[in-house]
Image: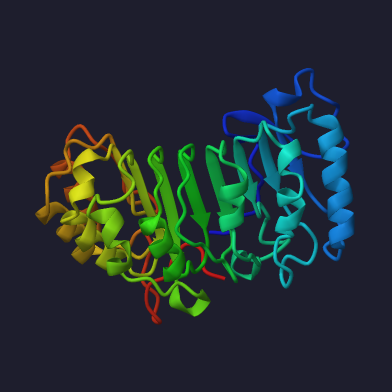
Length: 306
């Protein structure tokens, strides 16, 4: 799978895709997108584009903001100071997506970041934070009372970030989606790094858990099968990874999953018989076992790596 299209809605709002789009009647009713067409654009040029967006998005700034290519994302971390220095002008910000780039612009595992903890402290009203890419990504445990959705899309998510999430105090978080990726691109997590989350000791409001795009999908399936947090979830997503018959059998042999509304396993390496067994054993649950893959001579593969 390659990411080659941009979202047209974000936080349930239509996206203003470019500076050439007409100004909306209500600037708070759209998601604003900043995109540098020049991959070599400087931080000063990005800051200027940010100022132009602020001039159009109303006195409280955008409700939802998407940041695409900021210039040299393949070797320059997102210029976080542009957001932090303008926090007082972004009082309306509720949803933020950093790094929404296609693979033609920058491969997902080349997108550079830095310590994003200051974003959460600077924007206490933020309800959704989504990032693509994880090269250089850092996070420290933090308390944030408003955050409801946290999404990290990566070809390799550092275990330190996962542990920081588990150690954070996020009482309102209902949606957690982690693309764990592969070890070759920094995805060094094991199931034990998720233990505070899976044990239900953190994230008390969690109802959706996505552990996606993982080369340790079999290990994760076994951990989820015994995880106390599952009893209060409504949906589980183990898609885009290397799940096979052993992992699926672990899921079915573990705690009951019939209370779930959905179980997403698409892009998998299950046999047709096992895939059908998962569907048959979970009546009333929407189970996605689409997009079966064939193991290559070098082994299984996640949907997204480089």
